[in-house]
Image 1 (cartoon, rainbow, N blue to C red):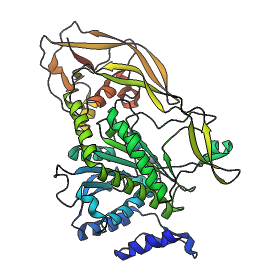
Image 2: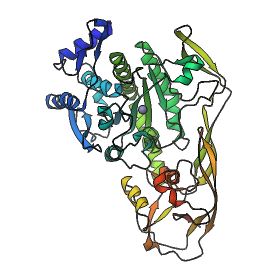
Image 3: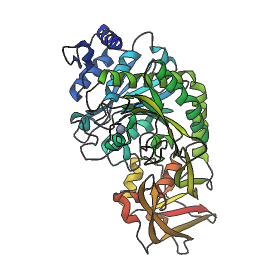
Length: 500
Ligand SMILES: [Zn+2]
């Protein structure tokens, strides 16, 4: 109750308290932030830009239905141009029915513009995208207007919303990113189990094992404990992001290792990249919004404080690990099939008991926190994409990959995969294809003019390998758009270029 008044008071102090803030009933205890629609969002963030020298809004793209996707760029200098600063990107509401990230972004913007808080901008340039999926948001729907799940779209980049985000990322190469979501703990399966998750704000880091080890270590040992501690101190229950369960039915893990989401698609570029998930209301909309938005805002603030304190170390690690990607010699292993495995640890999972109506701790026996590789390939010099594959060429363009024509010489070997059969493999409880392929050097001459060469010694090198290897469980061949690339009894059209 007290917190609610504080929020209202602070917002009113800076002069736009009436916009989007509504008291939902007679009773003050129900005072809440209502859900901000698209037009109101614009009406809120445009005046902030006009009135503050610290903020510049940029339209980074448009949704399927033509709505603006806006990045709020906070800087006390010229955004992105001071090499001593660290660049942070927060983006919210890829899923239109997860409204609290957007509301939290508005609260964060107001908070950050207060004189006592904008010291953070001495070291940080922050870009904040309150709403990635305006079309979905307007009808409180998860997917965008093309019925695509944006948070499974970061590898194929078929949607204008994800394309805009990656174009924007590429233009600044943010060192830190945070993808803001909500989770719903109220499923029937959990009800039957007798418990549900009750974490106000869960946080997670990158789990794909191709992401630099030092980035993953600092994330797990430094960032996550710090943010959880800060949240708990502000009386929001925080825990590690751990999908799966209920514990006796399905194993618990620390999220997917797929690179098609907002967190790992940037993580795979050796970005210090995270996800934050607030707990949704039972109605998936406005219920309890003040509390939900405050929790998400506090998570974002904790992230900024950690980055502020650790700026130099993070920058140094990211720089070093990105340089490694750019200059890496071919031959390094890249994991293209992996699985979650247990270690000796049991997970003490905080849950809410339906029976006692209180929080409790459940010991999870089938806990698989470790990602272990099943299949590696050695990183080639690059791949040759046939010019008669327009879908593949346009994919490479959407990712702004460096490409060129390959000049053949005696040190280069070109090989192709032949698809013998197509089996299947378990991927986090789902079944995905697992082709049986045989690789061999091409003995016939290759006219390199018929191909576009994509070298792997670029920032997106690991992503390129994961996308283009035919046996990759995260690869393009697992998407319907590209499924024709794999045909039993035929050669895979993308060629591998290696050093002899
Ligand atoms: Zn989500």
